Length: 414
Ligand SMILES: NC(=O)c1ccc[n+]([C@@H]2O[C@H](COP(=O)([O-])OP(=O)(O)OC[C@H]3O[C@@H](n4cnc5c(N)ncnc54)[C@H](O)[C@@H]3O)[C@@H](O)[C@H]2O)c1
View (cartoon, rainbow, N blue to C red):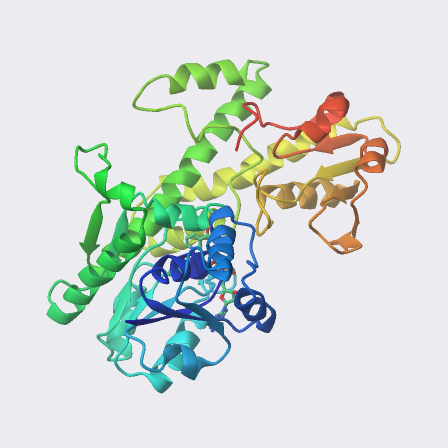
């Protein structure tokens, strides 16, 4: 079977390599440099399993049927499935996701292939797939949400928490294709997952084939719950810090309740990364005319938290003539290789808006400045020059200047 994938980012590349274990996969991107790297067996993103798969393919130890291309005809013509994993950034003007890259991928697929089952893996507004099916008069469009974490993109596809595919139950061919696609994803997973026992007592990887709109809602409600959890422990931390209480002790005591659980509870400067900020805003937009309190609170809580953090930083530089705030890493998590929408950028923006100058230590950024602030790769001089060092996540690099560091990474983990 031939499978095409549009977009070779975190989602597209991990799904492409997963499926290339069993099927012929052609992954298309619009960036020539990415395509070239992939065809040389090199990963454009930092991800252990993706690198291992590409290395294994290059050395013949793990043969994959995988090609990257810039040519839509090569990728899409004759494909049985065409998966779309292109960006859907939040458009603040429209107050909605910008889905234009998904639509241009659909146009490119249909220009050479009228039959492929198109599976949208990009995160889209609730109701989007059904709307497309109706307005385009194209019943061969499905939606399958992606739940991977950046940095563990292929790992999470090899060990998926669940597989969800959306198609209208009333449309028998689409329903059958959705079930078949779920099987393809499951077949690519680590075979050990077939033996696993889930919390509800079921065995193997849970596969949910549901309506397309329900599948879209699963994605946005899951990410909004994760944002809620981050925002909740951040707000607990804001309270504890403001009242001079030991936040760490409170969080431990709260989370020993097995219903609450001791995970995903480490305070930070806010929820960030590519998905949570935009997905929560999109869900809020989808609530238009539907009563709610929590969803807007989750969106607002992130702003309030960052304002609080910026004020705390300001308190630490009070009385210093021409203070310099050192931004230690722009990334969201310790092992991350990108800083799309990272919370620390919101902190930096606020600190600078208050007239304070900042320097940035970000070894992965090859540029002299970041939004007008100097970028340095010299950790020693960075530590010397900064009056306060702001770190969303702790790193042993900072051990010798601990008294200068401002972080809320209380548990020293992601
Ligand atoms: N990153 C995540 O953790 C994650 C998790 C779940 C879902 N998602 C969703 O998946 C989608 C993709 O996210 P990502 O992180 O993989 O994005 P990404 O930015 O890493 O990759 C997207 C790729 O698509 C390419 N592209 C853009 N327009 C194209 C087109 N018309 N045809 C072919 N390729 C095109 C880009 O060049 C880029 O390489 C988004 O909707 C995102 O919300 C992301």
